Image 1 (cartoon, one colour):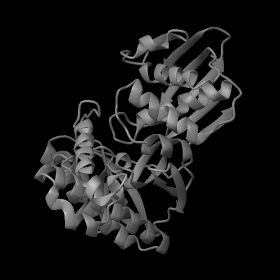
Image 2 (cartoon, rainbow, N blue to C red; image 1 turned 120 degrees about the horizontal axis):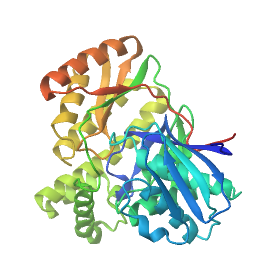
Image 3 (cartoon, rainbow, N blue to C red; image 1 turned 180 degrees about the vertical axis):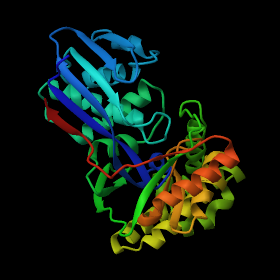
Length: 370
């Protein structure tokens, strides 16, 4: 079948700033060269005909009855995006759409955000609308929250839409503004390792952690007069953490200190202090393991094996946790050895293999006329 456009959006890796986007924090993600590509053409009907390169499954969505597809195994995200797009007052055209996802599913590299953002950008493209990346990111987030029922922050969709080649994004999740920071690791490169443990955000403790941070804010807000946990300084938190129940205090401690680590990481990146960036990655992983408790044995083994490798400056889990990936800063001439040593140690301790991805820091939404 011939298509008119190829519309792509990126998976993302979060360099640092985990589980703070929904607490109003600043996060530091980057878009990856692993993408979801949507081949699309308008078909003049009231149907969106979906197919995939990864499965033989096909589905036809009626654009006047989009509410009824939330339980589809394939096509629910696309239906949610089309419904949100239409409800936002945009022109929705029937179309034929082939989806080709290169972001590994369940990897914590945001395949869902890449699918949502590319689908919305494809719908905008065939309707002849100008691409507003910020709006597309916000609508994609809305689709995930209201249709797929994952109470996510804005980071994944924003990075997927707004990524810039060779730059990380310092994203202010409270004000939805960003700054691009050149991403240059010198003699080092970013290695992404997937622990290959299946995980699902909806069934994991993601929503539970959100409610715990909301409880912490409720207790600290009257005392500290803040809008969100991310506004609390390390010093103020230390003075007042006794007000929080033990578990709630641990969750809030992660958020406050992780926000501080993001600030230090951006400074390290700008000044070329890659060693400091590596140390901050290690601290972030320890906090996610001990204070936020979202890592699990697989991610811990992977991060520890990387941290103990001579030639790795730092490693941590990235994404929501409970499975997914780690990122490590590894000396370029030692990457092959790193994969061998870490891979063997992981297989020995866990009983199955991890995977490694070659990915570059890339642009977010791209559109190609075919």
